[in-house]
Length: 268
Image (cartoon, rainbow, N blue to C red):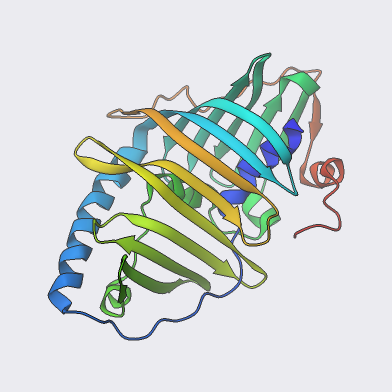
């Protein structure tokens, strides 16, 4: 079960799939859209700057076909965007797992199974560019719609919807009139991943996601995250992203992990 939880945390936020629809012309005055874009951009810049040395406490819940139903985990998070992340998750019996992601490599340690997991090219294994950068964007809500997406935004009673392409990926963002994202869809051939923001808090003069749900479109896996006790430092701790695994630990790679999880015939 814990290996499935590790895999879900490492992969789900970076799983992108089928094409989102292109949107029609904007409804409403351009000045309204420009004001919304300016407010969103200012808050996004503050969050992006803080993510270079960001820590928080998390409550993580996972479910879906890939992981079953995993008990809630308490975790500490350290981020140094765009390419470093560490998660240490605990439960009643002690440490559930530790995971460090550096650029395109993911390393995890599961003490209860005396097993280490190493994914040397995680992005290539799951078919996603810069997966850690994508996780940082999801947790910090630092999506960057281009000017053309704002000009083509579509209004409804809840706010606005924007759509744009990034190197073959299709993105669609629903944003409220408070300039806070509510839902982001990432799409590529084969499926869809949704990042839903259900609660926000204000820290350091910027709105930050407090509750986030990340799920694919087929029920394969869903992760719900509650962010608590955020802290933004001037610089990242140089020792925060080191992971020490015992010499006698069992080490598995991506192919072994897929076999252990029974994923041969599941979602690619």
